[in-house]
Image (tube, rainbow, N blue to C red; front, side, top):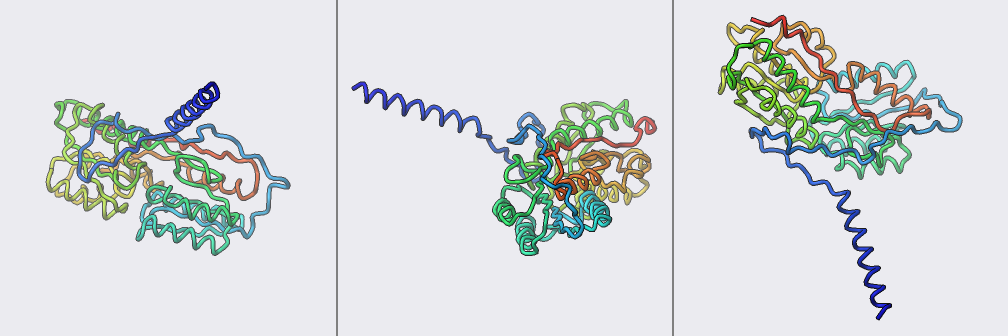
Length: 362
């Protein structure tokens, strides 16, 4: 009898430990809102933290730094049409030329994650030395190909997975915080340009891509906080578009302005969307540019003079990784190729950049 009780007690304790462990690791998924849905409850969005939250330095390898002349890098991004992503990729490519490193840049404009899966497979067959992979959606769907690349001895930096394994290093961006910073910037513009406007009178539109990935859903949730922090806002359109390009942003803005011609503030998912939105505004007859504010959650470095001039509808964005993300990305990849010490988790800085809104006061 005592033996039976002991066995039962042991089983109960093991089961309790297993349930506790499972409960600690479980994260409820956050569903993306339907297209054109207006979502303002930012508290409902919870950014899943990276499983490896402590940044550690990977020690240098014996004999490092290695000669990297002749090394080949595959640089895989969601879209070549996105000026921010393409601009960083181009800069990284140019910087590596002096080191004798070849960087092959691939976009997934046609096939999304399926296309990226094939690109990773192709890079494996090319026997490249390094892969930079920014997923065009949920990066977990690329893990089988990434694990195959790792088995082939290829180093990989992932952007933006929620945990380090199986990557050698990851870049992590708080998309929710990014969206909140954009919302704050847009609200600051409204307060400066429309100081006497009544509550609920400044028509605003969000042109986002909430359904494209959990990250973009979180950014979109951050954008939606504008209705909480800015009483003057009247959110009249919340559009979800999957294509990340200037023409897509322009078409979405044209449609929004047709339905709501008094929209004065637009928040776009990306730099490409923001530039398209600005083009749509500038095409309006008799437009007063100072009345409009367009804001984005990432940047095209070439647009900094335009944004900071206050002479364009595009008046602000958040620089993910700061204005020198291209340099930081190049230096991180170079360290990994050389075998010297490098951080395995990089938490991107989020730097708001905008024009001086006080110059727009009526």
